Length: 519
Image (cartoon, rainbow, N blue to C red; front, side):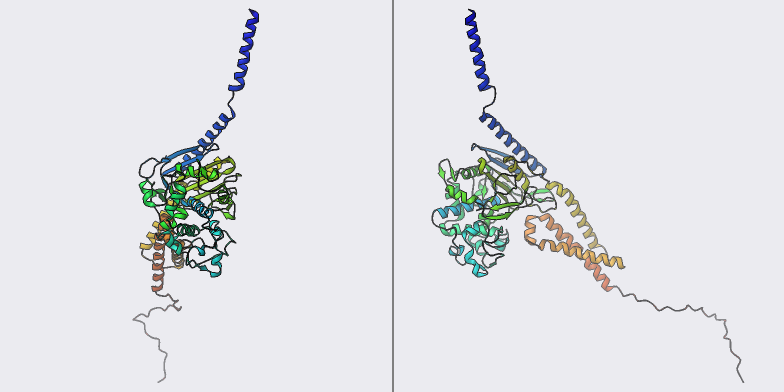
């Protein structure tokens, strides 16, 4: 009996040992899964705080993790009171350029286009100044943004001022004077990708929207992605917003000619599938939209590029429709692209070394011109990408905090300008003469500010509050100064009177003292 008990005890001890070795601590897969879950939680918390601090109405997030799973989340509202879901369509801004680039590489792989074909060989009538450089603008140089076209090439058709079809928008680029010889300098401009959109239509004989639906959206199951505004509205397009004195106000800026450069509409769910396909070398669930070599070409750094104030370090390269590398999110070699329209923003990023990716969509324009607010909205997405790659987000400011300072200043300056404009001019002393001149100069400066760079109409589109302030306060200051200067001109000139010795009045009773005369 004792021997039997000893055997049973030994078996129990062995069983306990086996259980402790196999079940007491988490398996590597479970530990990795826990780490991924914690990473997604931190990303969601960062996004939630950024949206709250900046009063962003709504957003949608997709995180593609190392195992290929996609985590989806909606935040806030569309602008009409409906909750945002991962299937809510947003305008994705310049993330659209990556899709245009992929579609062009499909044509290259089909043998219909060569990367080193001059664009003039495919678009009849294409011309630039100097004319000798027109043949140097190739498909490759358009893709990598080294065509030499300036940022505002195309004028109203590529700067949100004129709603025309893609082919017509491309014709507005004709006659542009290049800022550099093609292939020598990186210069970001929407016109490059408008020309590529026109190339797609010319070569395929199909509208851009139809071609992308057939060759990209349909094969990847992106059923709620479109390049047509009517279709986007039918799918429930979220309201876009612009900040006006810190309050997001609904607005939509959508011009057909800019679609290849920045106006594709998609959802977090669909873009998660798109990023999955890119991470997997151009294939998703057995459907291939581009060869692995083609994806490598998209991500290959081609030209040194610069970034905005949202980046940790403003250095990167540009491939075909993607920024590549640099250190905007930390040391990870990330492939990424921000997107911005006057009313929507987006951040897309892939970390090929870790098979992870992220897309964040927001329904407010991120290019806030108020001093102190530059890059604050973009930093929400940038911080999420930093967390995805194991880095810490950079300290982010708040658009609302910037407006708390800027709004009272704009209101007080405007009220002062209006008060001076309606005030009756007073006789001028020397100090008031100088004040009148200063007020006039201040008004002229305010009126001139919106004419710099983009011009009045563009500045009104992107920053209506600042542009309205400059117009109203500038006009009032100018009127006040003009009235003061006119009063100065009409005022009689004051001359110095000659000095004289005062005389004593003569009394009526006074008699002249006559000197005695002769005779």
